Length: 302
Ligand SMILES: Nc1ncnc2c1ncn2[C@@H]1O[C@H](COP(=O)(O)OP(=O)(O)O)[C@@H](O)[C@H]1O
Ligand SMILES: CC(=O)N[C@@H](CCC(=O)OP(=O)(O)O)C(=O)O
Image (cartoon, rainbow, N blue to C red):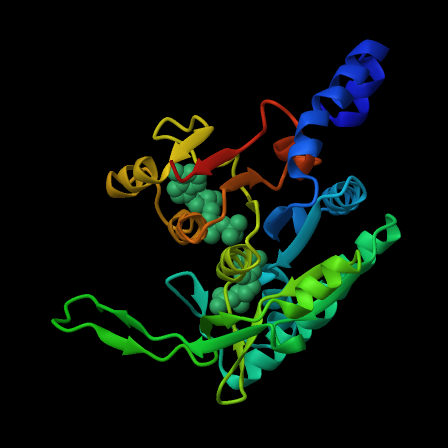
């Protein structure tokens, strides 16, 4: 049921109950940092975009410090298509030649980043957009991938062009913005020691950012209800050991593996909890953070 229609049919005491339910969570997370990876469906549907921006503004107003890291794979794909270029993906990552890197930088650092900044500001927040280049925030190194071609004995080395991984993060610019009550909105582009730009998967940047900022939580929005079991049921809470078992027995596969790895790396790096939640749900971030039930999968170090 949509929040609006739920509120229309709810009694005053039910509405009050919902508000009061948020109180212990607000107290617990006040002053803490929350890194949110924003991407997928939540970024293409107009209603979901508005609901995401309102969630972020509300969190900031109650004293929680959201830091947004965004993706934009489909938006990059759209512009490339209009320019007559196609992308090849290897292990879920876009092979990025110099021309494609220009498009990635224009779309992520320009269109997508500024759209999110504007959305948040329209709802009363004060967002500032950054790429990893600003304030020397994200240092990248070129990724080296190997792949075993069918019938080959030896794995071949794949040149991914300008695809990078996070080498280091200097959080000073983000800390400065947070202290000034701004909401940082970060595009996943890093700069190499060679001076070139690198295209980095947004989940990777979000996970490392959470670790370096010593965030209380990492939230990854995606296009499923969370981590699902073999029957398609939602797994609401998992430990690191349980996650490993689910990868080994094939329950977690495909694009969910690197996503879960980013989350477990962040937990091992000191982040208290990681959440994989459904970006297709209105107000997903608020529901996960400020209600007893939550909506997605909560990963804990324990
Ligand atoms: N156990 C699982 N639970 C949920 N999704 C899974 C699972 N195993 C594999 N997947 C797949 O992983 C996908 C999410 O990864 P991906 O498409 O890369 O996400 P995003 O585009 O949000 O970064 C899901 O849509 C689903 O197809
Ligand atoms: C190397 C690589 O693949 N980078 C991604 C960066 C954007 C991203 O991660 O966007 P989503 O979160 O929407 O998938 C890309 O070029 O699509």
